[in-house]
Length: 506
Ligand code: AMP
Ligand code: ZN
Image 1 (cartoon, helix red, strand yellow):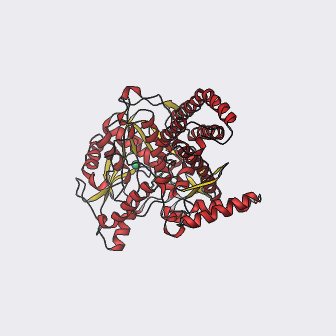
Image 2 (tube, protein in one colour):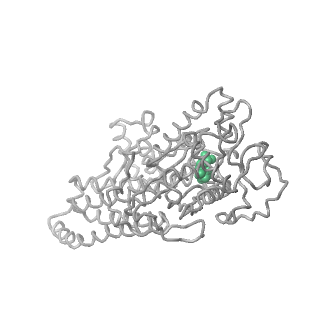
Image 3 (cartoon, protein in one colour):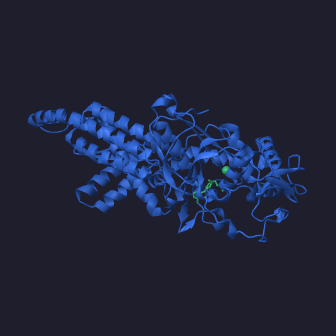
Protein backbone atom coordinates (compact mmCIF):
# COMPACT_ATOMS: atom_id res chain seq x y z
CA UNK A 1 0.00 0.00 0.00
CA UNK A 2 1.04 3.53 -0.64
CA UNK A 3 2.56 5.02 2.49
CA UNK A 4 2.64 8.55 1.08
CA UNK A 5 5.64 10.73 0.59
CA UNK A 6 5.13 12.44 3.97
CA UNK A 7 5.53 9.18 5.86
CA UNK A 8 9.26 9.84 6.22
CA UNK A 9 8.69 13.16 8.02
CA UNK A 10 8.76 12.90 11.81
CA UNK A 11 5.26 13.43 13.28
CA UNK A 12 6.45 16.20 15.61
CA UNK A 13 7.44 18.46 12.73
CA UNK A 14 3.96 18.74 11.18
CA UNK A 15 3.03 22.34 10.44
CA UNK A 16 -0.20 23.93 11.77
CA UNK A 17 -3.11 23.86 9.32
CA UNK A 18 -6.49 25.63 9.33
CA UNK A 19 -9.41 24.02 7.54
CA UNK A 20 -13.02 25.05 7.13
CA UNK A 21 -15.31 22.86 9.24
CA UNK A 22 -18.81 22.43 7.78
CA UNK A 23 -20.10 21.68 11.29
CA UNK A 24 -19.03 25.03 12.80
CA UNK A 25 -19.06 26.88 9.44
CA UNK A 26 -15.71 28.38 10.45
CA UNK A 27 -12.02 27.94 9.77
CA UNK A 28 -10.58 25.84 12.59
CA UNK A 29 -7.10 24.55 13.35
CA UNK A 30 -6.74 20.88 12.50
CA UNK A 31 -6.15 19.06 15.79
CA UNK A 32 -5.56 15.39 14.98
CA UNK A 33 -6.31 12.82 17.68
CA UNK A 34 -2.69 11.65 17.40
CA UNK A 35 -0.11 14.39 16.82
CA UNK A 36 1.09 14.46 13.24
CA UNK A 37 -1.25 11.67 12.07
CA UNK A 38 -4.53 12.24 10.29
CA UNK A 39 -7.31 9.74 9.61
CA UNK A 40 -9.53 10.70 6.66
CA UNK A 41 -12.74 9.05 5.51
CA UNK A 42 -13.93 9.94 2.02
CA UNK A 43 -17.24 8.76 0.58
CA UNK A 44 -16.44 6.90 -2.61
CA UNK A 45 -18.29 6.03 -5.80
CA UNK A 46 -21.38 3.95 -6.37
CA UNK A 47 -19.97 1.54 -8.92
CA UNK A 48 -22.83 1.17 -11.40
CA UNK A 49 -21.21 3.25 -14.14
CA UNK A 50 -17.94 5.05 -14.95
CA UNK A 51 -17.38 8.19 -12.88
CA UNK A 52 -18.17 11.55 -14.49
CA UNK A 53 -15.78 14.44 -14.13
CA UNK A 54 -18.02 15.99 -11.42
CA UNK A 55 -17.37 12.96 -9.22
CA UNK A 56 -13.71 13.27 -10.11
CA UNK A 57 -13.59 16.87 -8.93
CA UNK A 58 -14.50 15.68 -5.45
CA UNK A 59 -11.94 12.85 -5.55
CA UNK A 60 -9.30 15.29 -6.77
CA UNK A 61 -10.05 17.69 -3.92
CA UNK A 62 -9.47 14.78 -1.53
CA UNK A 63 -6.19 14.05 -3.30
CA UNK A 64 -5.12 17.67 -2.78
CA UNK A 65 -6.02 17.36 0.90
CA UNK A 66 -3.90 14.23 1.42
CA UNK A 67 -0.99 15.54 -0.65
CA UNK A 68 -1.05 18.88 1.21
CA UNK A 69 -1.06 17.17 4.60
CA UNK A 70 1.87 15.00 3.49
CA UNK A 71 3.82 18.03 2.32
CA UNK A 72 3.14 19.78 5.63
CA UNK A 73 4.55 16.81 7.52
CA UNK A 74 1.53 14.68 8.49
CA UNK A 75 1.05 10.97 8.12
CA UNK A 76 -2.25 10.22 6.44
CA UNK A 77 -4.51 7.20 6.50
CA UNK A 78 -7.25 7.68 3.93
CA UNK A 79 -10.20 5.33 3.55
CA UNK A 80 -12.50 5.50 0.53
CA UNK A 81 -15.44 3.12 0.35
CA UNK A 82 -16.87 1.62 -2.81
CA UNK A 83 -20.65 1.34 -2.69
CA UNK A 84 -21.19 -1.95 -4.46
CA UNK A 85 -24.72 -2.75 -3.30
CA UNK A 86 -27.50 -0.28 -4.00
CA UNK A 87 -30.74 -0.02 -6.00
CA UNK A 88 -29.14 1.05 -9.30
CA UNK A 89 -26.59 -1.73 -9.00
CA UNK A 90 -29.23 -4.33 -8.26
CA UNK A 91 -31.33 -3.14 -11.23
CA UNK A 92 -28.33 -3.08 -13.55
CA UNK A 93 -27.13 -6.54 -12.52
CA UNK A 94 -30.66 -7.91 -12.87
CA UNK A 95 -31.08 -6.47 -16.38
CA UNK A 96 -27.68 -7.80 -17.46
CA UNK A 97 -28.37 -11.21 -15.91
CA UNK A 98 -25.22 -10.89 -13.82
CA UNK A 99 -24.25 -11.20 -10.18
CA UNK A 100 -23.43 -7.99 -8.28
CA UNK A 101 -19.72 -8.86 -8.43
CA UNK A 102 -19.82 -9.43 -12.21
CA UNK A 103 -21.81 -6.26 -12.85
CA UNK A 104 -19.68 -3.95 -10.69
CA UNK A 105 -16.21 -5.32 -11.66
CA UNK A 106 -15.76 -3.25 -14.87
CA UNK A 107 -17.00 -0.08 -13.14
CA UNK A 108 -14.55 -0.60 -10.30
CA UNK A 109 -11.79 -0.89 -12.92
CA UNK A 110 -12.99 2.28 -14.68
CA UNK A 111 -12.97 4.12 -11.38
CA UNK A 112 -9.37 3.16 -10.56
CA UNK A 113 -8.25 3.85 -14.13
CA UNK A 114 -9.75 7.36 -13.96
CA UNK A 115 -8.09 8.11 -10.63
CA UNK A 116 -4.73 7.06 -12.05
CA UNK A 117 -5.29 9.01 -15.26
CA UNK A 118 -5.88 12.20 -13.25
CA UNK A 119 -2.81 11.66 -11.07
CA UNK A 120 -4.85 10.97 -7.93
CA UNK A 121 -2.72 9.16 -5.33
CA UNK A 122 -4.19 5.91 -4.03
CA UNK A 123 -5.87 5.92 -0.61
CA UNK A 124 -4.62 3.43 1.97
CA UNK A 125 -7.89 1.46 1.98
CA UNK A 126 -10.70 0.93 -0.52
CA UNK A 127 -13.22 -1.25 1.34
CA UNK A 128 -16.34 -2.48 -0.42
CA UNK A 129 -19.71 -2.39 1.26
CA UNK A 130 -20.35 -6.08 0.52
CA UNK A 131 -17.21 -6.98 2.53
CA UNK A 132 -18.48 -5.24 5.68
CA UNK A 133 -22.05 -6.48 6.08
CA UNK A 134 -21.24 -8.02 9.50
CA UNK A 135 -20.00 -4.69 10.84
CA UNK A 136 -23.19 -3.00 9.62
CA UNK A 137 -25.38 -5.63 11.28
CA UNK A 138 -23.47 -5.13 14.55
CA UNK A 139 -24.09 -1.38 14.42
CA UNK A 140 -27.79 -1.81 13.67
CA UNK A 141 -28.11 -4.24 16.60
CA UNK A 142 -26.48 -1.66 18.90
CA UNK A 143 -28.94 0.99 17.68
CA UNK A 144 -31.98 -1.26 18.23
CA UNK A 145 -30.77 -2.24 21.71
CA UNK A 146 -30.49 1.42 22.72
CA UNK A 147 -33.88 2.34 21.28
CA UNK A 148 -32.63 4.39 18.33
CA UNK A 149 -33.89 1.99 15.69
CA UNK A 150 -36.96 -0.19 15.14
CA UNK A 151 -38.09 -2.94 12.81
CA UNK A 152 -41.10 -2.34 10.60
CA UNK A 153 -42.48 -3.47 7.30
CA UNK A 154 -39.68 -2.98 4.77
CA UNK A 155 -36.77 -3.34 7.19
CA UNK A 156 -35.10 -1.54 10.09
CA UNK A 157 -35.32 2.23 10.46
CA UNK A 158 -33.52 4.92 12.46
CA UNK A 159 -35.83 7.01 14.62
CA UNK A 160 -34.47 10.49 14.14
CA UNK A 161 -36.52 12.20 16.83
CA UNK A 162 -34.43 10.22 19.37
CA UNK A 163 -31.30 12.11 18.28
CA UNK A 164 -31.44 15.70 19.42
CA UNK A 165 -28.47 16.90 17.42
CA UNK A 166 -29.95 15.68 14.13
CA UNK A 167 -29.66 18.41 11.51
CA UNK A 168 -26.72 20.33 13.02
CA UNK A 169 -24.36 19.66 10.12
CA UNK A 170 -26.73 20.75 7.37
CA UNK A 171 -28.81 23.21 9.39
CA UNK A 172 -31.89 21.60 7.88
CA UNK A 173 -35.26 22.58 9.33
CA UNK A 174 -36.91 19.24 10.00
CA UNK A 175 -40.31 20.76 10.64
CA UNK A 176 -40.46 21.31 6.86
CA UNK A 177 -40.39 17.57 6.29
CA UNK A 178 -43.89 16.55 7.35
CA UNK A 179 -45.56 13.29 8.23
CA UNK A 180 -47.58 11.70 5.52
CA UNK A 181 -45.34 12.88 2.71
CA UNK A 182 -44.63 10.48 -0.12
CA UNK A 183 -41.97 7.93 0.79
CA UNK A 184 -40.00 5.39 -1.20
CA UNK A 185 -42.13 2.37 -2.20
CA UNK A 186 -40.16 -0.03 -0.07
CA UNK A 187 -40.06 2.18 3.04
CA UNK A 188 -43.75 2.68 3.74
CA UNK A 189 -43.61 0.77 7.03
CA UNK A 190 -41.66 3.43 8.88
CA UNK A 191 -43.24 5.34 11.79
CA UNK A 192 -42.17 8.78 10.63
CA UNK A 193 -41.47 9.94 7.10
CA UNK A 194 -38.21 11.50 8.29
CA UNK A 195 -36.82 8.19 9.59
CA UNK A 196 -34.28 6.55 7.33
CA UNK A 197 -33.60 2.95 6.47
CA UNK A 198 -30.76 0.96 8.05
CA UNK A 199 -31.62 -2.47 6.69
CA UNK A 200 -33.87 -3.14 3.67
CA UNK A 201 -35.83 -6.39 3.54
CA UNK A 202 -35.16 -8.32 0.34
CA UNK A 203 -37.76 -8.43 -2.40
CA UNK A 204 -38.13 -11.74 -4.25
CA UNK A 205 -35.19 -12.42 -6.57
CA UNK A 206 -32.96 -9.67 -5.10
CA UNK A 207 -29.45 -10.38 -3.85
CA UNK A 208 -29.55 -10.49 -0.06
CA UNK A 209 -27.66 -11.30 3.12
CA UNK A 210 -29.04 -13.04 6.24
CA UNK A 211 -29.61 -10.87 9.32
CA UNK A 212 -31.50 -11.04 12.65
CA UNK A 213 -34.31 -9.16 10.79
CA UNK A 214 -34.53 -11.52 7.88
CA UNK A 215 -32.75 -11.55 4.54
CA UNK A 216 -32.00 -8.16 3.12
CA UNK A 217 -29.28 -5.61 2.46
CA UNK A 218 -27.91 -2.55 4.21
CA UNK A 219 -29.05 1.00 3.55
CA UNK A 220 -26.44 3.32 2.03
CA UNK A 221 -25.70 5.44 5.13
CA UNK A 222 -24.87 2.58 7.49
CA UNK A 223 -22.05 1.48 5.16
CA UNK A 224 -19.95 4.51 5.88
CA UNK A 225 -20.55 4.36 9.65
CA UNK A 226 -19.41 0.72 9.70
CA UNK A 227 -16.39 1.08 7.40
CA UNK A 228 -15.08 4.27 9.01
CA UNK A 229 -15.27 2.58 12.43
CA UNK A 230 -13.47 -0.49 11.12
CA UNK A 231 -10.47 1.42 9.75
CA UNK A 232 -10.35 4.67 11.73
CA UNK A 233 -12.19 4.00 15.01
CA UNK A 234 -15.34 5.45 16.57
CA UNK A 235 -13.94 8.99 16.50
CA UNK A 236 -11.63 10.20 13.76
CA UNK A 237 -10.14 13.37 12.34
CA UNK A 238 -11.57 14.30 8.92
CA UNK A 239 -14.58 13.24 6.88
CA UNK A 240 -14.96 14.53 3.31
CA UNK A 241 -17.41 14.46 0.47
CA UNK A 242 -19.16 16.67 -2.04
CA UNK A 243 -21.66 19.20 -0.69
CA UNK A 244 -24.55 17.00 -1.87
CA UNK A 245 -23.45 14.44 0.73
CA UNK A 246 -24.11 16.80 3.67
CA UNK A 247 -27.82 16.04 3.75
CA UNK A 248 -29.03 13.43 4.27
CA UNK A 249 -26.00 11.13 3.96
CA UNK A 250 -23.57 12.71 6.42
CA UNK A 251 -26.29 13.82 8.75
CA UNK A 252 -27.43 10.19 8.93
CA UNK A 253 -23.89 8.88 9.40
CA UNK A 254 -23.51 11.19 12.43
CA UNK A 255 -26.82 10.01 13.90
CA UNK A 256 -25.97 6.31 13.49
CA UNK A 257 -22.37 6.49 14.72
CA UNK A 258 -22.90 8.82 17.67
CA UNK A 259 -25.97 6.96 18.92
CA UNK A 260 -24.39 3.51 18.52
CA UNK A 261 -21.08 4.47 20.15
CA UNK A 262 -22.14 7.28 22.48
CA UNK A 263 -18.98 9.02 21.32
CA UNK A 264 -18.22 11.94 18.99
CA UNK A 265 -17.95 10.79 15.36
CA UNK A 266 -15.90 13.26 13.27
CA UNK A 267 -13.78 16.20 14.40
CA UNK A 268 -13.55 18.06 11.10
CA UNK A 269 -16.02 17.96 8.19
CA UNK A 270 -14.82 19.09 4.75
CA UNK A 271 -17.07 19.39 1.72
CA UNK A 272 -16.16 20.42 -1.80
CA UNK A 273 -18.43 22.35 -4.12
CA UNK A 274 -19.81 21.03 -7.36
CA UNK A 275 -18.68 21.01 -10.91
CA UNK A 276 -21.35 22.85 -12.88
CA UNK A 277 -22.42 22.96 -16.51
CA UNK A 278 -24.40 25.99 -17.68
CA UNK A 279 -25.31 26.85 -14.10
CA UNK A 280 -26.45 23.32 -13.16
CA UNK A 281 -24.74 20.60 -11.13
CA UNK A 282 -23.15 18.02 -13.40
CA UNK A 283 -25.14 14.86 -12.72
CA UNK A 284 -26.26 11.79 -14.52
CA UNK A 285 -29.92 12.52 -13.90
CA UNK A 286 -29.61 15.90 -15.67
CA UNK A 287 -27.88 14.29 -18.64
CA UNK A 288 -25.12 16.93 -18.61
CA UNK A 289 -22.18 14.73 -17.73
CA UNK A 290 -18.75 14.37 -19.31
CA UNK A 291 -16.31 11.56 -18.73
CA UNK A 292 -12.53 11.64 -19.04
CA UNK A 293 -12.86 9.83 -22.36
CA UNK A 294 -14.84 12.83 -23.75
CA UNK A 295 -12.03 15.32 -23.21
CA UNK A 296 -9.90 14.58 -26.29
CA UNK A 297 -12.89 15.40 -28.53
CA UNK A 298 -12.98 18.82 -26.89
CA UNK A 299 -9.29 19.23 -27.67
CA UNK A 300 -8.48 19.15 -23.97
CA UNK A 301 -5.96 17.10 -22.04
CA UNK A 302 -6.44 15.36 -18.69
CA UNK A 303 -3.55 17.39 -17.43
CA UNK A 304 -5.44 20.61 -18.23
CA UNK A 305 -8.49 19.21 -16.40
CA UNK A 306 -6.41 18.48 -13.30
CA UNK A 307 -4.97 22.00 -13.48
CA UNK A 308 -8.45 23.53 -13.89
CA UNK A 309 -9.73 21.65 -10.82
CA UNK A 310 -6.69 22.67 -8.78
CA UNK A 311 -6.99 26.31 -9.72
CA UNK A 312 -10.41 26.89 -8.13
CA UNK A 313 -10.76 26.73 -4.36
CA UNK A 314 -12.56 23.57 -3.26
CA UNK A 315 -15.39 25.54 -1.62
CA UNK A 316 -16.24 27.34 -4.87
CA UNK A 317 -18.21 25.98 -7.78
CA UNK A 318 -16.39 25.39 -11.06
CA UNK A 319 -18.20 26.13 -14.29
CA UNK A 320 -16.98 23.62 -16.85
CA UNK A 321 -16.38 25.36 -20.20
CA UNK A 322 -13.99 25.04 -23.13
CA UNK A 323 -12.62 28.48 -22.25
CA UNK A 324 -11.72 27.37 -18.73
CA UNK A 325 -9.91 24.30 -20.11
CA UNK A 326 -8.06 26.48 -22.64
CA UNK A 327 -6.95 28.85 -19.90
CA UNK A 328 -5.64 25.85 -17.92
CA UNK A 329 -3.76 24.66 -21.02
CA UNK A 330 -2.14 28.10 -21.46
CA UNK A 331 -1.06 28.21 -17.83
CA UNK A 332 0.55 24.79 -18.25
CA UNK A 333 2.40 25.94 -21.36
CA UNK A 334 3.98 28.78 -19.41
CA UNK A 335 5.04 26.35 -16.73
CA UNK A 336 6.43 23.88 -19.30
CA UNK A 337 8.43 26.61 -20.98
CA UNK A 338 10.04 27.64 -17.73
CA UNK A 339 10.84 24.06 -16.88
CA UNK A 340 12.30 23.46 -20.31
CA UNK A 341 14.55 26.49 -20.07
CA UNK A 342 15.67 25.51 -16.59
CA UNK A 343 16.47 21.96 -17.68
CA UNK A 344 18.45 23.36 -20.56
CA UNK A 345 20.51 25.54 -18.23
CA UNK A 346 20.85 22.89 -15.53
CA UNK A 347 22.11 20.53 -18.22
CA UNK A 348 24.78 23.10 -19.21
CA UNK A 349 23.12 24.45 -22.41
CA UNK A 350 23.95 27.79 -24.04
CA UNK A 351 21.63 29.81 -21.74
CA UNK A 352 24.03 29.23 -18.85
CA UNK A 353 26.74 31.22 -20.66
CA UNK A 354 24.73 33.89 -22.40
CA UNK A 355 25.71 35.76 -25.54
CA UNK A 356 27.73 38.94 -25.37
CA UNK A 357 31.32 40.10 -25.49
CA UNK A 358 33.97 39.57 -22.86
CA UNK A 359 33.09 42.83 -21.08
CA UNK A 360 29.42 41.87 -20.92
CA UNK A 361 30.37 38.46 -19.56
CA UNK A 362 32.43 40.04 -16.77
CA UNK A 363 29.63 42.41 -15.84
CA UNK A 364 27.16 39.53 -15.77
CA UNK A 365 29.34 37.40 -13.55
CA UNK A 366 29.37 40.12 -10.93
CA UNK A 367 25.57 40.50 -11.35
CA UNK A 368 25.24 36.74 -10.82
CA UNK A 369 27.16 36.97 -7.57
CA UNK A 370 24.77 39.67 -6.40
CA UNK A 371 21.87 37.61 -7.73
CA UNK A 372 22.92 34.39 -6.01
CA UNK A 373 21.53 35.63 -2.70
CA UNK A 374 18.62 37.31 -4.44
CA UNK A 375 17.65 34.10 -6.15
CA UNK A 376 17.68 32.21 -2.86
CA UNK A 377 14.99 34.65 -1.73
CA UNK A 378 12.95 33.79 -4.85
CA UNK A 379 13.21 30.08 -4.00
CA UNK A 380 12.38 30.68 -0.34
CA UNK A 381 9.37 32.83 -1.24
CA UNK A 382 7.89 30.05 -3.35
CA UNK A 383 8.39 27.46 -0.65
CA UNK A 384 7.05 29.72 2.12
CA UNK A 385 4.09 31.20 0.24
CA UNK A 386 2.99 27.89 -1.29
CA UNK A 387 3.00 26.12 2.09
CA UNK A 388 1.25 29.03 3.79
CA UNK A 389 -1.45 28.90 1.11
CA UNK A 390 -2.02 25.17 1.68
CA UNK A 391 -2.12 25.61 5.45
CA UNK A 392 -4.82 28.24 4.96
CA UNK A 393 -7.73 25.95 4.04
CA UNK A 394 -5.95 24.48 0.99
CA UNK A 395 -5.92 27.84 -0.77
CA UNK A 396 -4.41 26.62 -4.01
CA UNK A 397 -5.39 29.78 -5.88
CA UNK A 398 -2.98 31.63 -3.60
CA UNK A 399 -0.48 28.76 -4.05
CA UNK A 400 -0.64 29.10 -7.82
CA UNK A 401 -0.29 32.88 -7.55
CA UNK A 402 2.96 32.25 -5.62
CA UNK A 403 4.05 29.82 -8.34
CA UNK A 404 3.46 32.36 -11.10
CA UNK A 405 5.37 35.05 -9.18
CA UNK A 406 8.19 32.53 -9.15
CA UNK A 407 7.81 31.87 -12.90
CA UNK A 408 7.95 35.56 -13.69
CA UNK A 409 10.96 36.23 -11.51
CA UNK A 410 12.86 33.14 -12.67
CA UNK A 411 12.21 33.96 -16.32
CA UNK A 412 13.58 37.44 -15.72
CA UNK A 413 16.73 35.98 -14.20
CA UNK A 414 17.04 33.45 -17.00
CA UNK A 415 17.18 36.35 -19.43
CA UNK A 416 20.08 37.76 -17.45
CA UNK A 417 21.76 34.34 -17.23
CA UNK A 418 21.17 31.89 -14.42
CA UNK A 419 23.88 29.65 -12.98
CA UNK A 420 23.63 25.91 -13.49
CA UNK A 421 23.18 25.22 -9.78
CA UNK A 422 20.53 27.94 -9.50
CA UNK A 423 18.59 26.33 -12.33
CA UNK A 424 18.88 22.97 -10.58
CA UNK A 425 17.62 24.55 -7.33
CA UNK A 426 14.70 26.09 -9.22
CA UNK A 427 13.80 22.68 -10.67
CA UNK A 428 13.95 21.18 -7.17
CA UNK A 429 11.61 23.91 -5.89
CA UNK A 430 9.15 23.11 -8.69
CA UNK A 431 9.36 19.41 -7.87
CA UNK A 432 8.46 20.16 -4.25
CA UNK A 433 5.42 22.20 -5.27
CA UNK A 434 4.48 19.39 -7.63
CA UNK A 435 4.17 16.95 -4.73
CA UNK A 436 0.79 18.63 -4.24
CA UNK A 437 -0.05 19.88 -7.74
CA UNK A 438 0.97 16.73 -9.59
CA UNK A 439 0.81 18.52 -12.97
CA UNK A 440 4.22 20.05 -13.54
CA UNK A 441 6.01 17.10 -15.08
CA UNK A 442 4.83 16.81 -18.70
CA UNK A 443 6.46 13.41 -19.05
CA UNK A 444 4.10 11.97 -16.46
CA UNK A 445 1.20 13.00 -18.70
CA UNK A 446 1.81 11.28 -21.99
CA UNK A 447 -1.77 10.81 -23.03
CA UNK A 448 -3.23 8.62 -25.71
CA UNK A 449 -4.41 11.71 -27.60
CA UNK A 450 -0.84 12.81 -28.00
CA UNK A 451 0.39 9.49 -29.26
CA UNK A 452 -0.05 7.87 -32.65
CA UNK A 453 -2.40 10.31 -34.41
CA UNK A 454 -0.61 13.45 -33.35
CA UNK A 455 2.91 12.03 -33.48
CA UNK A 456 5.32 14.06 -35.61
CA UNK A 457 8.74 13.00 -36.84
CA UNK A 458 11.81 15.20 -36.21
CA UNK A 459 11.83 16.54 -39.78
CA UNK A 460 8.15 17.54 -39.56
CA UNK A 461 8.75 19.28 -36.26
CA UNK A 462 11.78 21.15 -37.68
CA UNK A 463 9.69 22.27 -40.64
CA UNK A 464 6.87 23.57 -38.41
CA UNK A 465 9.35 25.32 -36.15
CA UNK A 466 10.95 27.00 -39.18
CA UNK A 467 7.55 28.12 -40.46
CA UNK A 468 6.80 29.55 -37.05
CA UNK A 469 10.14 31.38 -36.96
CA UNK A 470 9.32 32.84 -40.38
CA UNK A 471 5.86 33.94 -39.18
CA UNK A 472 7.44 35.58 -36.16
CA UNK A 473 9.99 37.36 -38.35
CA UNK A 474 7.04 38.77 -40.30
CA UNK A 475 5.29 39.65 -37.04
CA UNK A 476 2.39 37.38 -37.97
CA UNK A 477 1.61 36.47 -34.36
CA UNK A 478 -1.67 34.70 -35.15
CA UNK A 479 0.05 32.23 -37.45
CA UNK A 480 2.97 31.85 -35.02
CA UNK A 481 0.57 31.03 -32.16
CA UNK A 482 -1.38 28.61 -34.32
CA UNK A 483 1.83 26.74 -35.17
CA UNK A 484 2.88 26.70 -31.53
CA UNK A 485 -0.51 25.18 -30.62
CA UNK A 486 -0.18 22.59 -33.36
CA UNK A 487 3.21 21.59 -32.02
CA UNK A 488 2.00 21.65 -28.45
CA UNK A 489 -0.91 19.32 -29.35
CA UNK A 490 1.70 16.90 -30.67
CA UNK A 491 3.55 17.12 -27.37
CA UNK A 492 6.34 19.43 -28.56
CA UNK A 493 7.53 22.16 -26.22
CA UNK A 494 9.20 25.28 -27.64
CA UNK A 495 11.59 27.73 -26.14
CA UNK A 496 12.40 31.00 -27.84
CA UNK A 497 16.00 31.99 -27.16
CA UNK A 498 18.11 34.79 -28.61
CA UNK A 499 19.89 32.15 -30.70
CA UNK A 500 16.64 30.77 -32.24
CA UNK A 501 13.85 28.40 -31.23
CA UNK A 502 14.68 25.25 -29.30
CA UNK A 503 12.25 22.36 -29.19
CA UNK A 504 11.84 19.02 -27.44
CA UNK A 505 9.19 16.39 -27.01
CA UNK A 506 7.29 16.51 -23.71
P1 AMP B 1 -21.79 9.05 -6.22
O1 AMP B 1 -21.05 8.02 -7.02
O2 AMP B 1 -22.99 9.61 -6.90
O3 AMP B 1 -22.10 8.57 -4.82
O4 AMP B 1 -20.81 10.31 -6.06
C1 AMP B 1 -19.49 10.20 -5.65
C2 AMP B 1 -18.97 11.55 -5.17
O5 AMP B 1 -19.04 12.50 -6.23
C3 AMP B 1 -19.75 12.15 -4.01
O6 AMP B 1 -18.83 12.58 -3.02
C4 AMP B 1 -20.49 13.33 -4.61
O7 AMP B 1 -20.62 14.37 -3.67
C5 AMP B 1 -19.57 13.74 -5.73
N1 AMP B 1 -20.24 14.46 -6.84
C6 AMP B 1 -21.34 14.08 -7.54
N2 AMP B 1 -21.65 15.01 -8.49
C7 AMP B 1 -20.72 16.00 -8.40
C8 AMP B 1 -20.47 17.24 -9.10
N3 AMP B 1 -21.23 17.65 -10.11
N4 AMP B 1 -19.41 17.98 -8.71
C9 AMP B 1 -18.61 17.58 -7.70
N5 AMP B 1 -18.78 16.43 -7.01
C10 AMP B 1 -19.82 15.64 -7.34
ZN1 ZN C 1 -20.49 7.98 2.84
